[in-house]
Image 1 (tube, one colour):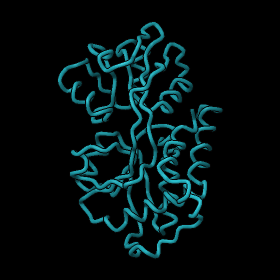
Image 2 (cartoon, one colour):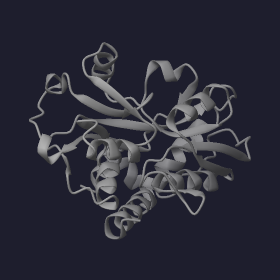
Image 3 (cartoon, helix red, strand yellow):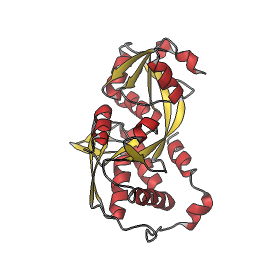
Length: 265
């Protein structure tokens, strides 16, 4: 499964286009006007996490490399998800990653057109509470653990707002899995790489992933609308395209996944 996200994302680009692009030059785009960016991500290992007081992870490395190719120094820090969204709203951050698209968020931040990853949202529960999941109705009335302001799929988000199930908010996924182990929530919804990592590192033998996932969603780099980044966004898109064409995206992703699955760090 570790190659699923890479395969899905690479599938967004045609084989012909990738074959033709070996080193995309940015001559057709306006010169970069920015020399530095202050960006944020949340604790979402292996995509983003804190190591020895600094931000690290798959997407941290990817975004910093995009900046390097553009001659931009990218500073990345880890923030709680709700706080990070507020910082994007008021312009305290230049960019953040990775966010699912919603019309509400588009009011205060601009999205790249190409996702930085495709996230398979999985359902985790205790072994003694395993149930068959085939439709949203199977979640009705359950105690579901999610992050505040974390989006799943539109129809479920709406139904949760309507009281379809009992929602328990956690400050991060680490806390949500503690709540799951303690049987204070029945289901946690999270990217499957993050869930699998937490089960391994926390040694949660009582927690399992249900066979059928909730959805697969595209997640994007976004830029605050408090400043004009419209000429910069295409540069980041083409830098990501270039990294995928050259294999740097896949190498970075698999390097981090291998380290997490082998060492649990």
